[in-house]
Length: 454
Image (cartoon, rainbow, N blue to C red; front, side):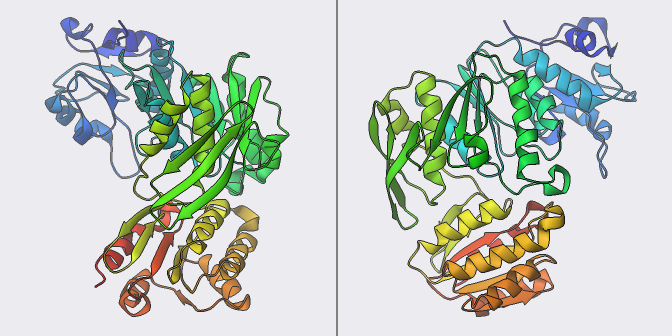
């Protein structure tokens, strides 16, 4: 039986148990950081944020069914037991790592500059055709989200797919120390978090910290079309995936049927399968290759891999396509960096509709920011974008470069509300409209106006 109790938590974190002695050994199942998400049996983690202090919601969490809290300060009139620690964030990482060590199931870690979430969803879908799989929910891929995910493991799970997102050196080490993946997929090394990582080589250095926490018997699944990853030696077996002939597993005969379907062959030395994904985006075959490689490692048959791929569904904010009845809306506004924006524009260019891109700032690009934004404008013009609408301080460089590169038509808006107001005038019936920017730009605020066009 894999379980936690307040007593165990106090012991492994060097914390202080506060509460009735009879509650020390109550079994804890799962964890939550938001009292509105608490389930019976949970550990509630009191996190001090910039605007909200989780300690204020401890008793609400108890009322919702939490059986213990993790806290940094005493909880007045606590309605249940809690463990006092100097830092709840550090403690939850310790707890997550300890709990993961109780399980001997295969764990697949996923990281990279672009496509982490898509690859995570695709890999979980593939493995899910044979196994009971735990996967990272939503975007819980950081130093708080990862241990919360690990604490969702239970004895029914036969595999886990854990997304690991970083923005600085050392973060991957802290994540990988908890996750200890048996297999690691790196999707690509690109221009992300350059403010802290400096260059793509810095990105590779930070991402590859994961291999220091893997067994020599582990396997690295790497994008072989990415020069940095192709030449990288992780110190263990590696499988290269991609479109180029040198890869161990590759995609051929890619055919896109608008936004409805993407078909392609998955090929390796000993087998070939004809795959079909009922979704949109030229980035999908790469994710499928990584997922198929993981599936083969874990003993899946070709039919099971195909079954898993056919069950894949995109999640909101990641190239999710909606036919509103007036336009084809491509909601890709969860996040953005130069690699992902170019990929999104390439997918848009393959459509037959009038192509509209609503683009905003790509953040954390450091000294290269202006240049990289200008490259996006040039790329958009060269890939047939018919209408470019931009908002954001750095997005002004996208617009300027688009116009100077003889883009068809573009417009820049200093205020978000002005762009929203212009949508009925600028967007025409039948358009394919891509919305993409870094997460903190909140470009999801454009979606209601776009969905409401008629």
